[in-house]
Length: 128
Image (cartoon, rainbow, N blue to C red; front, top):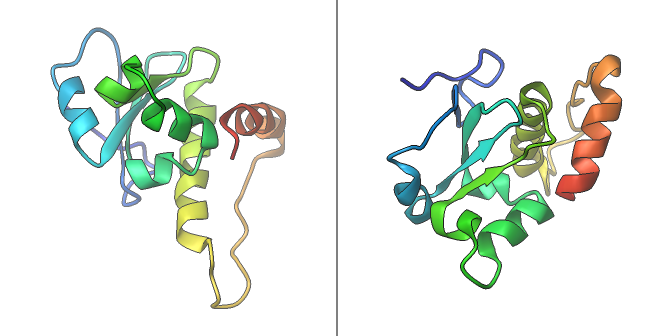
């Protein structure tokens, strides 16, 4: 069963507790969604347009060759925790929504100070 984390509901993110192979991974490459997997194995099903806000993910999914990420439409992040990956995905949607916004000031993207360093390192790696 697939359930969105409470802070992600209604934003195009679906999450699933991971582990083991997935029968839908071949479908992921052919759809407009990608699967991002945290260090703990938590799987996030994310709109491809939001995921490619990250230059790193974009390169992995669209790069030349026959990389697993390209063929299966999923990317594993063994160094990024579930909480950090979830917040990073929220930022992907935020950036996608507000890029080229001409409707006044942008709403603040909330970051808890205790997670700021980990988010900064993940953002640096993901080129966001």
